[in-house]
Each structure stands twice: as C-alpha cells, then as structure tokens.
Length: 325
Image 1 (spheres, helix red, strand yellow):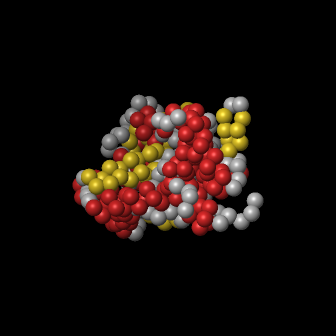
Image 2 (cartoon, helix red, strand yellow; image 1 turned 90 degrees about the horizontal axis):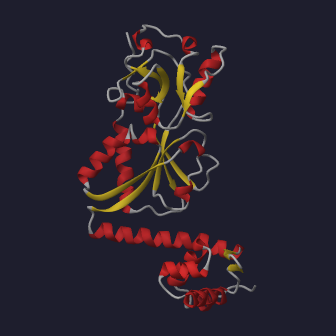
Image 3 (cartoon, rainbow, N blue to C red; image 1 turned 90 degrees about the vertical axis):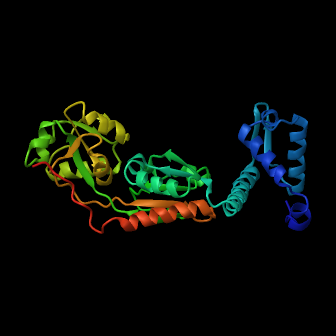
C-alpha cells in the first residue's frame, strides 16, 4: 500500500462511528452479531466496514465461514482506536467533573490484602467528602504483575503489592505508597498464642494456611524455614483469600502469615494474635500503578491525592505488633 493521505483519506472521511462499529465487529467476531448488538441491519454494518477499508486502503478483517478476525492492520487500528476512545471518555469525565466537582466515577483495581487494610479509612474519608462520586473496587491478584485490566483501560488505576521490580514495565507509572512486612498469626484460642517464646521450628508440623508458591508471604516463610535448615511445611490450605485464612483461624488450630498492615487493622475483628517470631526482612511495598501514556481523569487524580495524604500520615517507623506475653 502507498502512503496514506491523512487530510484527504482520513481527516475528512473517517468518523468515530465507523471506528465504533469496527470495534464491535472485532469483539463479536461476526457482522451479524455486531448488527444485533448495535440494533442495525447486517448490510449496514458490512457497508461501514467496507467504507472504512476503502478509506484506509487495507483489508481490516479476514472473512471466513465462522465469522471475522482482524488482520494485522485491523489489530493496529483496534489498539490505537481503543486509546483514542479512552482519551475521549476521559475528556467527557473531566467535563462532567468540571460541571459538578461532587460527581463522577472511578474504577480501581486492588489486592484483597490492601483493600482490607489501607483502603477502608481512605474510602470512608473520600466518600464523606465527595458523596456523589462512585468508586468501583475490583479485586485483583497482584503477584503476576500482568495488569491486564489496567492495560485494556477497564481500570483507571491499580493499588498493587509489588512482588518484583517494575523496571521492565516500560508502559507503567509506579509510585511507591507504603512499605509492609509480615506477621505470623493464629487464632486467639490457639495454644501457641499463650507462649512467651515460639521457635519457628516448633511450628513445622502445624496446620498452615498458606498463599500459593511464588507469592510474597510464601517466599518469606520459605526463606525463614530454610534458614533453620527445615523444609517448608505441608499446608492444609493454599489460597490468596486473606478473608478465608483469617476466618479459619477462629475455627481451628491453624497458623498463617499476613501482611502487617492487614493484621493491625483486623486482629480484633477476627480474634487473632501475632506469634513472637522474627521473619526475614524483605521489602513489600504497596504502589499506585497507572499507565504512562494515559491521561488520568480529574476524579482519578483526586483519589490519588487522598492516597498520598494517607501515606504521609503513617509514622516513619511501623508500629510494633503486639505479641503474646
């Protein structure tokens, strides 16, 4: 294909509606399904796609007996079109916020251990100040650092625990918010909570509730047992669910590990106590993650300002966890 004349081929002929129809066809995988979704006839959809291909000068979709699939050119247009529509949506959100600074919405991805430790106080303060703003909080598992929802722009920002360096994530802005450490805990009625001293080796045969291998807490415990020349205990349960592990502590003689921020915020609620065990010091920061080349809405910037204010309010040195006497 030759060089595309932006002014004559694109600037005067390409419409946002054409890009929208093309996006729906690609999502649905067929002209008929796209037409049904858009509430128009299939010939109308086919005409839009044909005009779009003529305007750009390349085939955007491969047609087959089972539907359509974007070509390499189609994927390139979809990628940039998604960004264009997202920026337009962000602009509309900014206009809405300027018209009414007390209204809007924000989509936030957050690890469960963060949302149950640091977020409640922040959200309460934010919602009290801006009751018209709706916050959507989605639980995400942060150890994989794929951040699919952030990259496809279905989330505005992530509050993530950083398990590994972000240096290879060139498309992300990463702002460290707080540091965290780990606590070994048991239910308040567990006999181990009445010991003045607890040796980690003595817990090797206990019923452990662990996060899956590769997670930060699992790695910390593996290092701690390795330092004592011991293998990692066989777990009774492997789960990322911090609520499930906390609830089980009250039901049986289980032992687990939590982020210290979660433990301090929820020890009384779940009737659990920390065991006096020193674990290897390993940084586990909580970070705000956004896309570099995405314009944040005014509401997103407002919420991030609240996150920063919360982080500044935390003492430089973490408060010590109460250990059983």
